[in-house]
Image 1 (cartoon, one colour):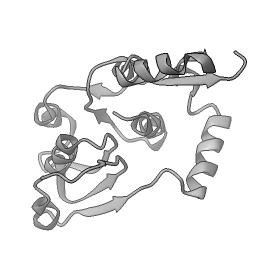
Image 2 (spheres, rainbow, N blue to C red):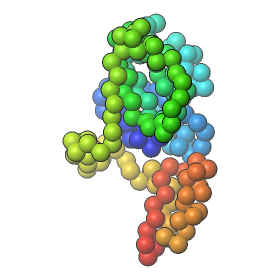
Image 3 (cartoon, rainbow, N blue to C red):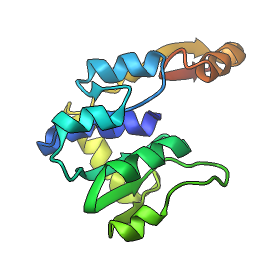
Image 4 (cartoon, rainbow, N blue to C red):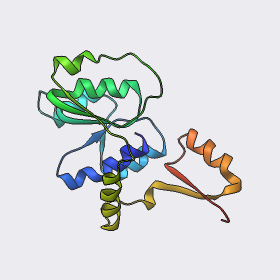
Length: 165
């Protein structure tokens, strides 16, 4: 799950909805578990006890990984909604025909919408979203290579570079 996915995951409990996630291994996975999301290897298995037989109403694809999009399309019920947050950065093949066959609504979301920033700041100010647990390390600017290396290795969630630290 991408960092944006972690942010969305923190907001979901405030909507009264159940949530689950699927992601790769690493420190981000440990963080999302602490936030209370249910995680399973096989999405089909978790849906048996999680949603009704028709599938889920709403799916957020936050990773930008083609298999995750496929899992979301498969998990959605007829006339469900897919919110595409993750950016793929390349062309890929997927069973997008499910959008028409299931009459899905697809929404794109980009993280730089002014109204989203206002809402995010309000949630942080109210203590509903915790940002400190997302910060794995605060490193001096001179250690930028270490921060990038650890980030690429998925050895943490966020690494802050602080000049003068």
